Image 1 (cartoon, rainbow, N blue to C red):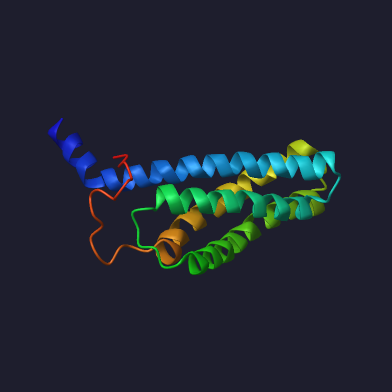
Image 2: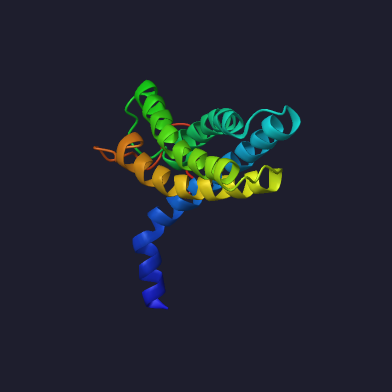
Length: 158
């Protein structure tokens, strides 16, 4: 039992961060999938155009959630810089989704919404691995000074 407690204490900050990142990611995934199906299924747009538009909307929600909740304990290097890098890295991650969706539609010739959604899930999964690593490395940087344990007017959630 002592080992488990020490292990938790050692990795608790990472565990909390990953939980928050996963929660924001799940919300962004629901937005992305909903918008993808709306654009492709209801409005009849192409799958790649639908994916780009859905990603723009879901990435904006994800940025806000990650900046102000998941990584709020990290240094803020300017919203403009962070927003630009966040969307640049999301653009790279979007390529994973576009490649999988394009392969599904244009190589496998699967044109139904179920195939589109399965391809989207695979693409989002691959992109998520890249996004978590890249956000920590380039967007939401480690604090160079200790952050106060209590911020004025902000209740801590730990």
